[in-house]
Structure formats: C-alpha cells, structure tokens
Image 1: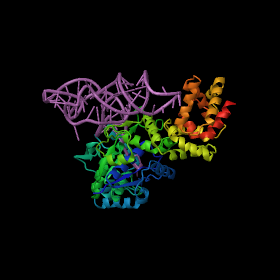
Image 2 (image 1 turned 60 degrees about the vertical axis):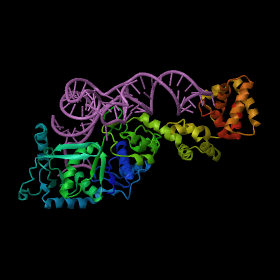
Image 3 (image 1 turned 45 degrees about the horizontal axis):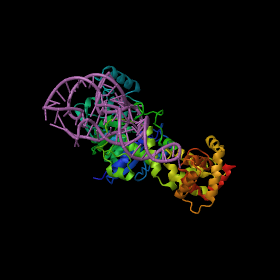
Image 4 (image 1 turned 90 degrees about the vertical axis):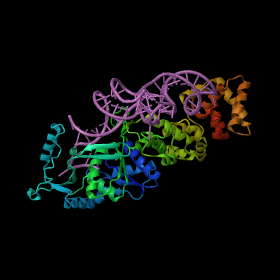
Length: 467
RNA sequence: GUCCCCAUCGUCUAGAGGCCUAGGACACCACCCUUUCAAGGUGGAGACACGGGUUCGAACCCCGUUGGGGAUACCA
C-alpha cells in the first residue's frame, strides 16, 4: 500500500511553528515511503477563514520547501459531498436528526459538568425518538450514533495504544442545521476521498480521533493510521503563544533565519536519530520514522535555532547569500557597484562564519558594499588618530604599491615583515589597517579583507584614511 | 469538574532491565588558537520529579503521588 499523508491547516492565521512541524513530519514521512504528501485547506468555517491566511500558509510551505503533490484541496468545495454522506448515514440508520435548541444543549452541558462525568454533554435524546415528534419550524442537525458501551482503542503510531470508554463519547454533530458539515465529518470524508493512509497531526487531535474512528466505520471505510505528535510549548513551558514563538514562519524569515535551519530545528524538536544534530533534507527523508518521535511536548529554544542558523549560514552557497544581502541593500536604498558585488561574493565565506542571522550578515557586508571613501565609526577614528599608526599605514602603503601578487598569504607576509622591521607587534599594524580598510575595529581577517578588496580599493581606502 | 496524554542536565534529546561512573547538542564557564570579532579545538559544571513495588539487578516494567499539557462547541 502506498503512503498518502496530508497537512490540513485551517486558514485562520499564519503558518505557525507547530503547524510547520506537522507539515514537515507529514512531508518527510510521505517522501521517505515514496508516497504522496497532500495539502488540504480546512476552510469549512467560512467566518474565520481568510484568503490572506491561505496565502500566508502556502507561502510558508514554499519557504520551507515542503512541496506538496497536486493542487491544494479546499475543503469548503466538498460541502455537497459531505452533506450527501451525512444524509446517507441517516438513511442507513447510523445517524439521526436532532432538534435540540441551543438552550437545551447548554443545559445538558451544564448538567454534565456538575455531574462529575456521570452525564454526557448530549444525552442522545433524539437518538431513538420517532422523527414524527419533530417540532415544526426547526432545522435539525445530524448526529452520528456512537457506541454506548465498551471501549475504543486507537493504535497510535506515536502515542501507542490509547483507550477511551465509549460512554464518554456522545453523539456529536456531523451536519449543522444550516446543512454545512462540521470539521469532524469533513475530515473523515476528505481523508477517505483523498486516500489518506496516515493522519499525522498535533496531539490536540487525539481526542477527536476516537470520534473520527467511529465515523469512518459507520461509513464502512478503512480507518487511516493515526500519529499524534506532541505540541510545541514556549520557553516557559506554557502553550505557545504569540509572545514566545507562535509566530508565522515568515516572522522567522524576517528575523534572518534560513529555511533549512528552521526545518532542521523543527525536525530535531521531538524527533531524533542518535546523536545527529545537523541533518540535511536528504538525510531527513532517508531517516525519518514515526517510532523516533518523542511523546512529550518540547519547548521552543531560540538559541538553538540561532546556532543551527549560524551553521547553515556557514555552509550556504555564497552567491545565494550575496543575493540576499543585495536585496536588503536595495531595500535600504543603497546602490551597489558591480565591483562591490564581486567583492561581496568573494568575501562572503568570511562574513557568513561570523553571522548568526541574515541581518548580521548584511551589517557585516557593509565593508564590501561601498566604495572608497568609506565611513568610519568612533573606534576606527580613534585608532587612526594616533600619529604612529598613521605613519605605519603610510609606510605600509608604500610597500603595498610595489607588491606584485595580491594574495592573502602574500599580504600577511608583507605586514609581518614590516612589523618586525619596525619592532612592532602585528596587532599594532593590523588594527590601524582594519580601521582604515573597514571603518571598524571588528572584521574578518584583515588580510582576507585586503585580498577581497583588491589592490586599487585597498590603496584608495588607505590613502583616504591616512589624510 | 471529567476524560486523555506526558515526565532524563536550564533547553532539545540518547537510552527499549545489566553496555550508565547516564552519552550528545544548545546555552554557560575556563583554557588553547589568534591581527580584532566570530568560528574552531580542549576541558568543566549540570539530569533519571517523588514514593512504593516487581527483579539477583530498574532511567527503562507495574501502581500511586506530584507537576505539566491537551480535549471537553451547530471552531478547526
């Protein structure tokens, strides 16, 4: 049997961290088994669903490179089919019409609460009542008949066997009085119609699974395998809220996170493969399994995400990172010369190993982005205010003018020789050089900077700083 | 309230009864490297929630307690 999974977000907001991880696990499981990964937008609650949210979710999925198979499915478009199924269940005697008013329902819920579990939220009062008793002028809902005794066990692929007494399951609504399907019905019908073999979703759906299981059976359909993955909590252990990380994935993109870092982080949150920490997409597809998904909720840890991000920045293609920096520069209204662009790509590895996110990368990039004369910060100015430092720079500049091969090692050698000849420590030469060349007291190796800058730009900056 | 789930360093986790003196990663501390800042290297501190069983032997199995989370809608 070929595997079919689906990610089924409701478009009431952005694609948050938890949803992204659910999507990732579904994606990985399907790819691992060579199956299909489908995307279904659960927009049956038309009041709360928005097109912006749909777009945000699709965008987030694309950013994370979680490509789904086939066009996305909109649940609201299957409403007719859902209604047919509900009516068929009534005809088959597996479901029935209920004419209760909201007041009656509220009363029953109240009773259930004070009864301490002895009463149900709905007492199945219309279950066996004659349809001829139906009051006039009331549109009924359709409820599914649930078993009244015994117990139901779900063999969850992550949580193991979970058993629930059937008398805690009341006859829930599958079709609203306005004829629209509820979530419970829509999920079951769509999962069946889509051929879903594995429903991998958040732990908050575990309770629903019991109801859905019986709905599948009432319809005479195969029940998919269930896998309920633990939720992600905030750093304080409480449910993830907007305050600590239930942000849309695009917020992380804005924070300067690379999508591969995000995926890697999300994967390791609740899933492990021995001691492996940095895991590529290929390895993830090869290794992913449900057995290794942990059963306890995990806390979101920004530091670890950032650490992973720094790693992926280090190994990322320089041209790709440079393109990102250029976009930021453009957005900031900075014009970058073709020469500067070349320098940026050449110097990118040295820059990337010093950044934790793309914003830092952008700031670090400034030394290559502009052409002489460059701006000096306070520390750099201070360092160049020293006469001895400026003299050293001038003397070194003279030597550099005569240099024939402009490699990092060559330049390093010249500076060392010069420092030795004047009885200076290398730092006494390198720091003024750094100030003159980068306008800052912090940068990659100054000889690397010189090599990347090239002879003309280096000498121009040197001359500018010495005067 | 009721039902369901969970429980190893601060955090993410390894661990499927003896390989555990509990391993790795992030964060933290120290040292090394070093022209600055990072990166990197080496080392350090740091956990089996508690109480009972079962067993020759328990982080691993069972029960309870405590703590945390989820679900309890004509939302999804």
